Image (cartoon, rainbow, N blue to C red):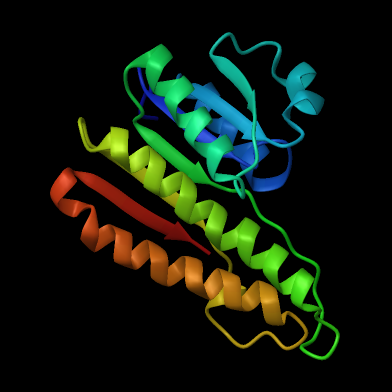
Length: 179
């Protein structure tokens, strides 16, 4: 297993699910992991054995929160080597049952949050290169009746990642999408 010693990686949505498990995996491999979510304090006890776990509460939908997070991390560590965009939201409903508020919330968390975090991290990451991993879903690749907002948002994450892979390549930033 490759060591991630001396690497600083931000994981959004780290209070549950894929973000939580990803943070543990990266910590086990030696990275300094900045765990962030709106509810990050709730999981601090689960990570007590990791001296390289750092907890910063934040909201990926709030630009000021994202800017503050990234500035805080870079100011302390002078590098950001990785970003894993795991923050996500789903409330499966068909098109007739999906309110505009639900649609906006789904897109805000799943896509806008991914965009804001990528944009801010890339500003610093371009100095040294790095890796961005965006978590999408197979719902973004195939028709998913009853999941209108979620499927649309995750399809957008797939294309956003492909676009970032091309756009950020010259800054030695690699972008991946996992479904």
